[in-house]
Length: 205
Image (cartoon, rainbow, N blue to C red; front, side):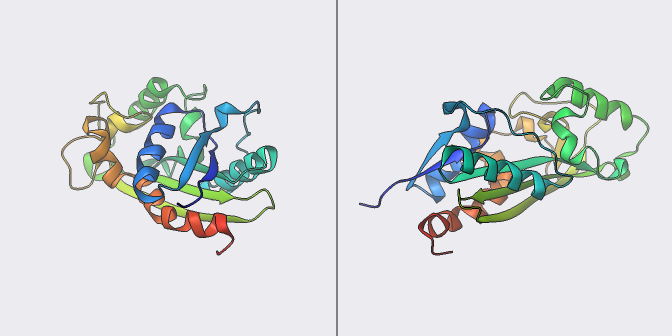
């Protein structure tokens, strides 16, 4: 029987924890996922100006503070008509961190006169693995789509209610968790990194 590797997930967001658990159960069943909420740690300030920088910063900090390998992601929405914003500021776009409704309302206001042909956007996710010794590994996943004029759907979190993926007539908030996992930016990144986790933790990568 293979030994289980403990891996700390650097988020307290229950939606993200559930999403990662579902995907790792399939792709890395020998990994025991632990939430950073189990540890008495301060939140890591996201001071990087790219998704990659923030993911590495979070993963490295948690790995060093817990003494365990850590996995962190930085993700958000990049809207073409806003020059790639809100980008790394997605979670606090309206001012308060994690206020999904206010963030969505701000995007709708800023795109109010933008036609459908110019409402392209991408959900972006960078996932970083880190060891306490400073070793890191990253992958990137993207899902292209468009921003709707009004929210629709009650599944998911964040900007899901206004994001319609290319090739679909529904938002990611109208999809089942399994359907969303199969196409999401985080799902893409996790499927990229899942086969690398065991070799990375074992020192083979």
